[in-house]
Length: 467
Image: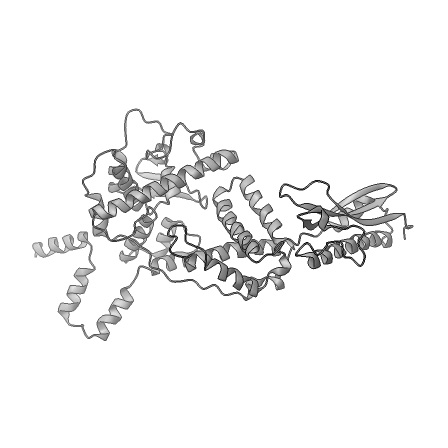
């Protein structure tokens, strides 16, 4: 056993605030007049809230709303440091300041959920994951507003209970909807906030900040609202395609983008706007998706090739964008492949993300106008082209779900089947016919004709003519 040395332990507060305007408290370990600071998760908004000479472990004054919890955390931090020192002595090892600090810091020490959340979001932004950063930052901002509403000095991992989640949901249900201030957040929007919140807590569990048994989501039941996805029928697609629009107008380009996405298996908006001429290889569209980095290689249908012909010109370069929504002269345009975009600086990734978001919003605004012109009483967005393709896929009975899974680039067949199931009403339709007794041959023929596409009807006419 090593001989005890003159090691002392005390608490220390930073002289200057951190970037969040808060003062961090450390455990100060001193040996032979040399010191080592071990960071604790405790922070205070004002230096006067801390009293290093306090008795009975009341270092944090009652001016801090979380004084009880913070004092408990500091007491444990001091105890852990002393225990680490004792263990080193028991093991017969040489006592060093670094050895004590390393032994203490092997396990996560942060008890602040908000600090953990902030660091998580900062890492997303630093890594250029702008889309995910925006999503998680929205959750953080909602939690921060909730914290202030509850007059909590901080949100600690120990605060997380099912009751806490219920209060948070109640708060979210009263937040005005950004699109329509006269409405509140839709239930599914709230569930998505909780879904991202849960993924963050899962990460905290993996890293040891909170135990699996203390995860409140283990006992929380998500309550999604089933909604109808807007999608266009084939007749409505044809109506859009046949609209007489001024060439090169914004409405004209918008219509072309929507239809090209539809005819290319529902290409996602972000990928669609970034397509280059080099992605066209003969009669195929080949690119890597931005969302999941999966490779897509789609056979171009004649309708899609006709749209491409509208944009071909002698001056086009292989790396030029196909559709004129993103600027070829912008610095982010130099990154042609997904691999190149992944290595762009954060500033460029942010600029590209904002440009895509703005153009997508503009296209959706123009699609709303096109719907009125075409007398289509549906809320059309660029993403609806993906839903419309899925509906056409489910109506084509000979197409297997596995093939549609590949075209939609879903990670699992279950996702695809759930996706397609929202559009398939054939079982329910058959049940209605049986319930109400419409099972005569005429009714069956009428039902069959009503479900046939224009191409199928034309084929039937040609076969009857031959007879």
